Length: 328
Length: 291
Image 1 (tube, rainbow over the protein chains, first blue to last red):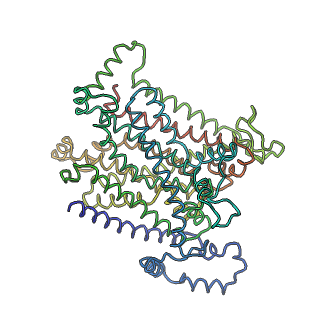
Image 2 (image 1 turned 90 degrees about the vertical axis):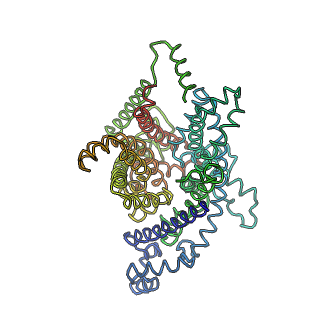
């Protein structure tokens, strides 16, 4: 019962946040000095006469007040209509759906890989605390945390695509091949480098966090007691540490979707991978307001689902919370 | 509780020669080293003549030499000069943006901790709101709305980086408020203002300082990222993001030095700030300070 009421409260919070994100983003765009008509027409703006301009303004309802425009936009939004993307000339919903699947493949691979490798490294470092293994892992993680994601992408691009020539330089499919002729293998090949970039960068926080947690656990009384009973080595960690450390790690991994999304934007840009990240950069550069607003709202939903899942997993995995003995 | 740890430290101390350094001293040494490095780096960048930024077509596309340690680009500009000037620019943006962000975080954190339940709820909601949009996307949106450029990046970074620090400060204030000496002070009839400035502020200052130093690397990296995407500083500025996004066109031609050195320098600068912030935090934590 308690879990359900907590969930409902969370979802209510999501709704208020979403509404706020919509209102604020819309207001920001309204206040911006960018002329949507000029952005829409682009370089041909000189060819458009005053009369045509007037027509477009009326057609889009730009002559109405900001509030009326918002009501109109929000009304459509509630019905699942985010407007039409100016760049792709398609409904924003379809663009996001398309692009999100490409990004999802990328993010999922990176998420799983960085989670597993990071967790493993963290365990190893804590197990060998203060040894050279620990020092190397720590140094590696701190250095990664200071590395710009896009630079890591450039490095991988140089090594694997330019020097070794093993993998393609960019795009999610080979150039000049029809969409239906693209094989799964091709898609995979184009996925490797961006996914590797994101995984390498994503390892750092989870490894450092896991290491710290396990060190805390290992200095606890119950571990001391276990040692006194003669347990030692990895068996000790597996029996007494793993579960305690895994819960916060899973939570952290789910809560890091915001960083992952940001990383995906950069990695997609470096490898010209046609995902949601690249679409948002395009939308920003070329002034595609409906698409930009759509992606902001969508990414909010994405990040929030991650946080919600983190919360649910926490309650499922931690018996103390599951039984409701620990309340907030 | 921490018996094993204590034993370990004890053992280590006993066999160590007296002349070797303890944790506190190595921490201090790391901070001094990082500060000296940064001062030297930024000092060089500041006093360096702008000559290297001019294009000299006869020196085009040179790989690194003694005169041009980072090589030159396709216009014959010296990459060493461009990189250092770029770091200086990043430093400036990071400075202004993180200071503004710290001011926002401190103000909201203190408000949440002192002005009662409703203000607290509003601030918590605001924090959630800003954390619910991915940093980079928030930056793209704000930068887009402000038309990009220096102003867009600074405001964007300032507005997206405060929530985590605000949370820390709020928690700190709440903890302080329930502590005994503050309660006593209140019973003695001191005003809220007096308590806030005389009792609370001295506790918050180190947190704020460390928060600032740890925020700085993020600010710089996000500035470079948004500039790299083309939504940040303008292409005429010698920014690291610009340099790296330009270098992409020349990588397949094998001009590796265009990307390696500028990125590495940025990494070094960010890492040095991290070292200062991280070690300062350790020194301020009492249980760590005396190891």
